Every structure is written in structure tokens, then in C-alpha cells.
Image (tube, rainbow, N blue to C red; front, side, top):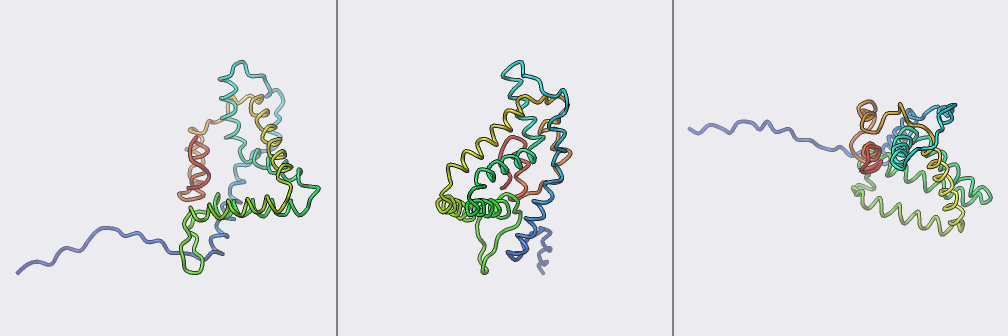
Length: 204
């Protein structure tokens, strides 16, 4: 008599969809957790830390190290400059803040699949939707150039600071990954670590 086949030992993984509200809630929690790597603001202006780089290679090294070390601080500065450029138009500022919030919660800090009305929304579809919403927001605000100039000024300020601030003693992305890697997970939110390490982005 033939023996019955042995039971399979293969582990099967399943993904349990959660509601859109829970997805947003977890994204918001991830966003809040990102401030744990916010550097003290006085650290940006430590006395004696500003020295002109002696070579182009040194400038690039400082750019990479400082942009990694102060990435949250720099993001706040760039956002603040963008917001200030729209201060004369509250409607445009509201649109800018709303669109940015959508990007943060639905793309950059999202680690769960998005399910709407029982349908799994792919990451590509989310990205396309956010791009369209952004284009519509820029068109409605009528202050696109103000926003562009504000963001560019903020980025320029951060770049100048990163080049001039001595990065000696700061952990480079590869070294710090061992310390903060546990704070980044797979999926949309998880790929931020890939971005910080020189590839990928804050998302998948």
C-alpha cells in the first residue's frame, strides 16, 4: 500500500490588508519616528566647525556626510523656505502643504499596501496619482515660480552649509547604517535607508 505524501514544510506568507485609515496612521507614525534622527540645531553652527574645503574631493565628501547627518534638518530648512516663498498667498501655501502631506503619508513613509474599496492600489498607480495631484496643485496655486525659487534657495543654503561645515568625526552613511538600520523597514518607508546609503529613495 502506498504511503501518503509527507506534509509540506514550506512556510506560506500572507499579507493581511489593513484599512486606508490604518495605513495613514502607520505612515504618520513612521513620519514622527523620523524626527528621532533630527540633530540638535546648535550642532549645525558649532564654533570652529566651518572651514573652507581644500579640494573638490573634500567638498564632495563633506556634502555626502553632512547631507546624510543633517538630512532631517535640511529637509525642514528646504520646506521652510518653500513655505516662506508662498507666505503672501495663503491658498497656495495650503495647497503646497496638502500636496506635501500626501507625498509623505502615501509614498515616502508608507510601508503597507494601500487598499481602496477592496482593490489593492499598486505603488506605480499611487505615484502616478500623486504626480497628477502635484501638477494640478501647482496649476491651481498660480505660484509655481515662487515655490521653485523658495525650494532652490533652501537647497542652496543647505549645500553651502554642507560644503563649509567640517564633517570630520561624522559617521558616513555606510557606518551609520549599522546604528539606525533597525529604524528602516522594507517597503515604501524602508527604502529611505537605501537613499541615505547612496541609492534608492525613502520608498520602495
